[in-house]
Amino acid sequence: MLILMLGSTDSRATAEKIVNLASASLSRGHKTIVFFNAESTKLLEPGRIEGFPGLLSRGARLLVCITSAREMGLTSQGDLIEGAEMSSLGELVDLFEASDRTMFLG
Image (cartoon, rainbow, N blue to C red; front, side, top):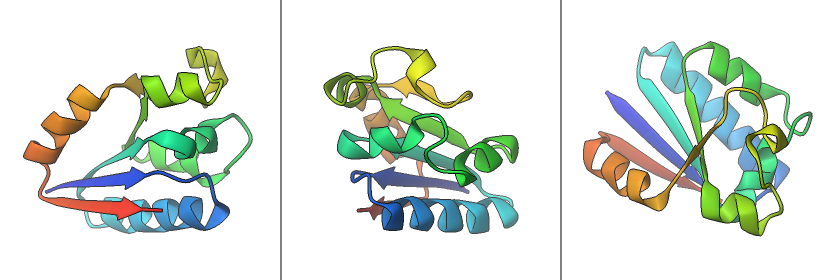
């Protein structure tokens, strides 16, 4: 089962929900993708949220909207934690079609 999560704010509460829900999804053996859009792209700055590298090591994909990242001043891959991937809204549309469950978080 493919679980898709979308974040849109950079609040700590949103980050905690993403980490907790993605961890639960991975624990159940689900393929898990988190797409960061708008302000949530700032959550992937190095050192900001401790739980995201752990999600990556467990097989989650962390995708960042390249347009949103640029709007938030994150202009290169080096501005993000290692393992986060630049993506696009086009890929997000494909993920909507492919996912079994989609969650919108903050």
